[in-house]
Length: 252
Image 1 (cartoon, rainbow, N blue to C red):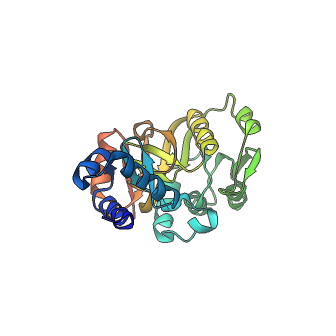
Image 2 (image 1 turned 90 degrees about the vertical axis):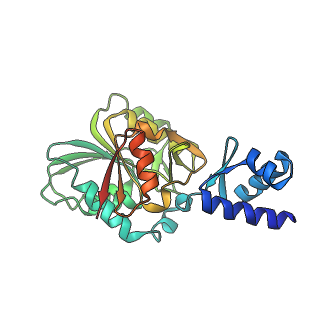
Image 3 (image 1 turned 45 degrees about the vertical axis):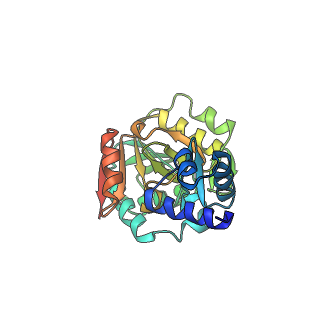
């Protein structure tokens, strides 16, 4: 089998099974594990999959920049944003992450809501300005242009002593084994720090992120309190989330 044929077969199997295991593929195809790993490495470099220990998982389409992500599943994100906005109670102190789904959440918050919102997303802070009774606390730092959020040591210092009711978090991949992931190590560290500030963390996840993985792990799926997904999301993924003890909220 030619290398190009073998790699096409690997991608077909990944789409069918949701994962690749290098040892199994080596035995099945009669080739060395080193050859399979080399194939996986080259496919990962091309953005076709994400390598994990022992094999590979589907790459998340959400690893692109903000402009790219705006084009992915806009209706799903509107429904998820609406459901997440309904979870905010008057008087709460919350953190809202950056990202396109978080922006949809902000757009669905009622204008008469009294709450305090911390965010490291300038776009989220600006969108919140339409709600006159929301106290907006913008967490500053170096701007990470890929995701249009602030990061860095200055941001981390501002989180010292911060305690909030709920952190509404975005991610680019959610997988029962690989956990909650994103494409940048520093961004993953910021999300973990924000998670530690909150009594609960609610994950907002459009369908392309379910069962996919990005390079940098944020936390285990079980560390999340709840995840908001669209109705019609993969029943297998929903079962895996519930087995991990995560409450699943289905958005219309």
